[in-house]
Length: 164
Image 1 (cartoon, rainbow, N blue to C red):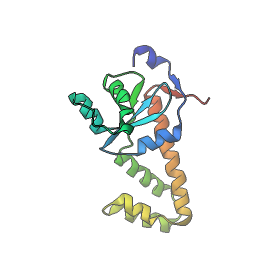
Image 2: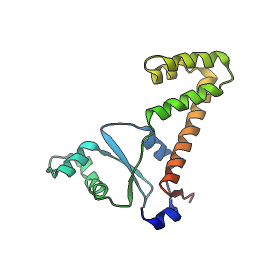
Image 3: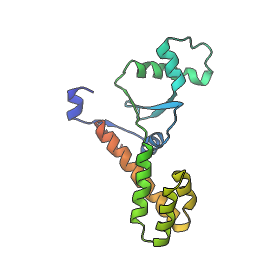
Image 4: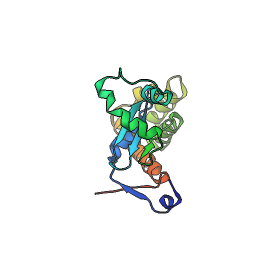
């Protein structure tokens, strides 16, 4: 982005839930990019990006992937209309779980969830330990935290949500 872009945010109509989904989907097999003209989040396979970078022939691609070639070429050419969506890091997701546990009023649930976070595979153990109204509280808490991450990321990219 140039200096002018930094002073006046670019207004983009974005499906916030689609952006949140892109930010919370971590995969080594794909990368997600936001189209600043449409507000759509598009995932591209890392193998396609690598093939284009290496100048490999793309004749053997399946039809569904051929539509991604133009997008991948634009991304690799640093087209300013495309920016990579940064996924939420696992340590940030872990911190969200810790913050949730810290604010719980139910001491028994808090103790169970704290133990889940201390063992191996804390993400799985945490989700398995959620029950009843605590599960509902968690879903609301997590959704709010993810929306906050998405809005902060947009702000850091100097993008303003267009409500229209």
